[in-house]
Length: 341
Ligand code: KG4
Ligand code: ZN
View 1 (cartoon, helix red, strand yellow):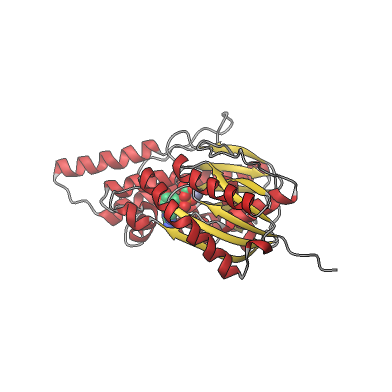
View 2: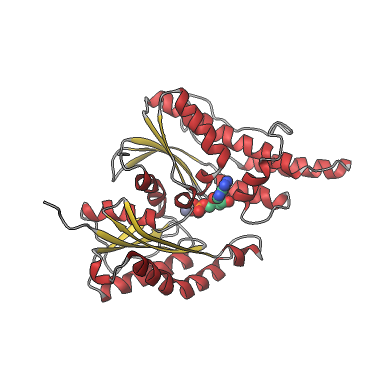
């Protein structure tokens, strides 16, 4: 007997992308609309929270309508509304949360609040239909760097996190320092292909095995080392080769992310490893982790780049599993900028 599919309308507005999607039975995307504000924030060299909120207000209704239209649905075909309620920029989150609450109330639909970081992890389920927990996941985004054991659809255990800057934040700051501008990650990824990753050996922060939090990360020292290198070159009148610095910085980040991940894989006897978050679209990181997983006979998963950076399909996927286990949010749901994993 075929049971009726469960369709989630998902809304995401935690940073600078206004996104809506319709996802069926958790893993099939019927539509995935992303309105990016990158061009707007490029003018200022980074995301301006107030501008992000205003733009979300302009875009949230048409983007959601487009998601319903492309899915060939009306609200009558939807079983629940899922929305990111944290972590993120408070004003940006509030736009999505308020709109989702109004939609759910007006259409008498259940509302499911979703943690954005859990959404990034869930992005892996969309293309890898066979993937089921348990698996290990490295979540690397603009605001977060977490190495986690995903034990089931509801729980995960944090093994390591950043003690200072997130990986994406380091990419963005270094890109600005070497004149690549915003958004830094994709630009460093691109120019690094023309550079020598061994031109400058930048420091890699690694914590000792056996120590508490041995899988933690730290990127602020690396960022300072790049800034010091730039200063010292300009004092000595030496030419700065942007591509070499980008490639050398990227190599240091990838080395540390890979090192901690593989130590944890080996010590925990992991069989499946997944990448998630915006930095997971980095070509050097993807190929390094893939190669290390292959060496160890570990199955490697990584969403397509469009599902790594912020999108609503991942919120629909995570929202589906929460909805099916009975999670319901009421109209007191609020934006939680510091929501933890
Ligand atoms: O997950 P995401 O879209 O938003 C957050 O939840 O933060 O991640 C955005 C971050 C930014 O820091 C951006 O520079 C970085 O992901 N990023 C990349 C690449 N594409 C996006 N970093 C390195 N290489 C990339 N190709
Ligand atoms: Zn994100």
